[in-house]
Length: 193
Image: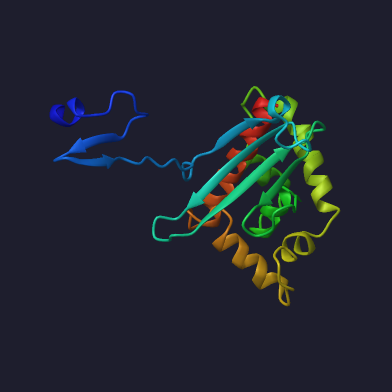
């Protein structure tokens, strides 16, 4: 209201005013946005020297108070790696392992989640994506994802299912939606690389 603005301290940083003879403050708090993809160019800030570009999402389901931070980074050679920061801080796993963990193993189907065949970027990106698929197929996704976390894992399959359901894009409740959005995250990385 105008009467409050008239009483505001003009030399202050804002949020300070006098009401009925008492000093009052309005505090503002910043927080990162939930369920929105943030794209970073690491070549300028060198936030992460391992990757030339990265995308992050802090996802939160509406019915839960918990959030998780998923970061994808692309190296100069085109390989994309994933980090689930609330599961294990410095573990970077090939992106295609997460498709395997969602029981999606067909290369053509995975490629369709990432990029459409009629996209102008397809001809340039498809060889990199298929090379990433080959890289991921040489290592065992169960060993990579199944060993994430601080505690020793006894049942890797159950642990992977818990990670996919609880920490990996948990604002989506179906594997199909998770796969499509994860493909979009990878597409965002390769689009700007």
